[in-house]
Amino acid sequence: MGGTTAGDYDTAQATSRDTKVVVPLVLLIVFTVLVLLLRALVAPVLLVLTVVATYFSALGASHFVFTTVYDFPALDDNVPLLSFLFLVALGVDYNIFLIARAREDTVAGHDTRAAILRALASTGGVITSAGILLAAVFAVLGVLPLITLTEIGVIVGIGVLLDTLIVRTVLVPALVLLTGRKFWWPGNPETRAEAEEPRTEVPVG
Image (cartoon, rainbow, N blue to C red; front, side):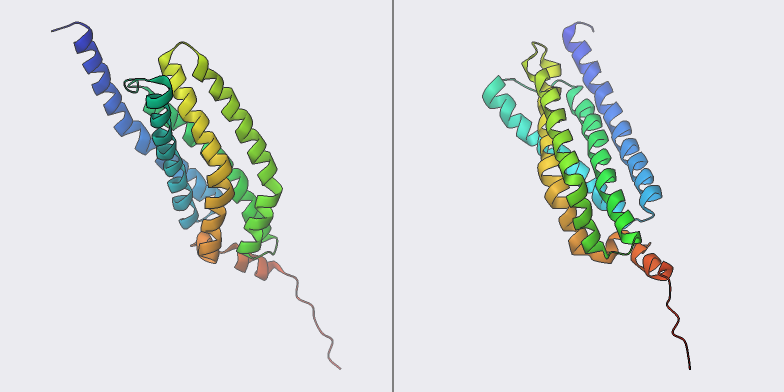
């Protein structure tokens, strides 16, 4: 049996198989990198979950756009996986930029709550401007006559805006504030900072 229908079926099956392999592998690699960078387990888990949440939120929001604005019947088979790869790469990049700075401030002597606020103040402008610029770049794909590129552009553009304006600005700092020192478990950069503080000896006599 051949023809367009059989070809579409084979493509859908292959894409589904690739998704089941690539998505867990990418998340595992990202989690490992975050563990090595932050020397923690709780923080990488929460950060990976925010990236996944951003992806599904962008997928849901873009579905509304596709059905109401573009009147697309369905997503192309390759779009979800490609959009996932783009959003994971961008989301993790922003995560690393923000949380690595927070860890540096924690090691420098600030408590975790103060460190994340300092990191947000120092990196927020860069993350926001970069996110808006990237969203505009991907939004350009939304006006192309190719449905696949249009779908990818809309999903990634919405995802970058969500990641920049909500996840990295509100959600991630809120998670850090709620968890406090537990965010760095099993490491504890606050204790390390306290141990490295020079002790002042008081002369006797």
